[in-house]
Image (cartoon, rainbow, N blue to C red):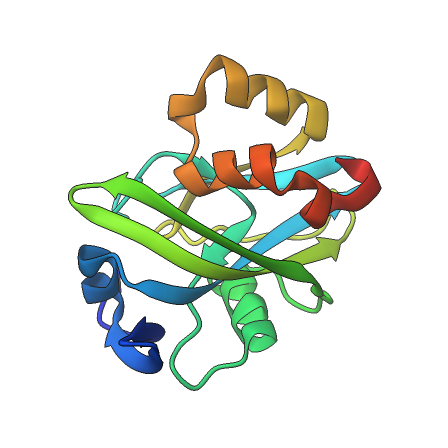
Length: 176
């Protein structure tokens, strides 16, 4: 687990490099990237590894992370698809920007300005899960995901609940 990378965060109205864990401890507004891999009306969700420093064992979108200080959002999306799921050679499409603030436990706050990407792929896309990052992955239809979020919200990360209840139209368009 690497928490000492420098990520872009706003301090006194200026974007500055801040250590990732410090940004979460202080609840600083910071840049993030989220990716949703889609196959028709199904999306790939992942269950976060138990060694993650927040929200371990919870289900999240395909992948999400923070760009490093000097990294583009698109490069970040591709990097994390490869690092977390072993997915390479796909073409993430930028869908828009979302901002949210959520308590993720242990005194940590995610206050993120998120660039959201969608990738269209086949359910048989080869994957190799990184056990340090992901303990499981599953394809789920949008209606089934919404039903699960209502029935058992505690199984999902705060940001996935926010994306699905407040920003599904932006992210998924007509598929939402």
